[in-house]
Image (cartoon, rainbow, N blue to C red; front, side, top):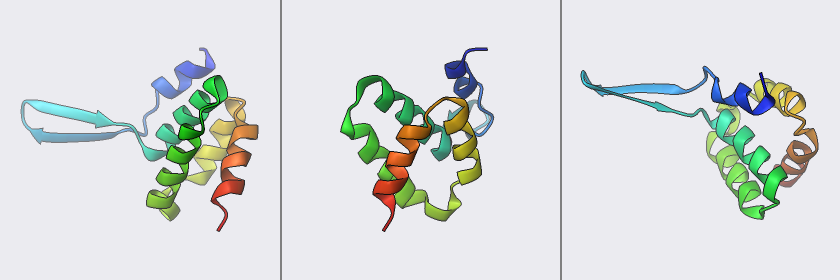
Amino acid sequence: MEQSDLLSHSTRGRRVRPSEDYEAVFASPEDVILKKLESYREGGSEKHLRDIASVIKISGEMLDFGYLERWAEELELREVWNIVLERTKS
């Protein structure tokens, strides 16, 4: 399995069933962060880092930082993740 496939098979998504006929799945904040880290690495847009900082600010202590650390390492995103952590210290 390729590294980018690992995120697409995440089980951390949130399922919402507003009616019997409809179900929606939303990505977890952690998976949004990881995808944004990948996008930043590929394109270098600061927008992705700002988006990540916003997710961290909103979700704060509810985030699973162990999961983020593990996947940042697995997906070779450690360097970018460290940049984000440094910027969000305060």
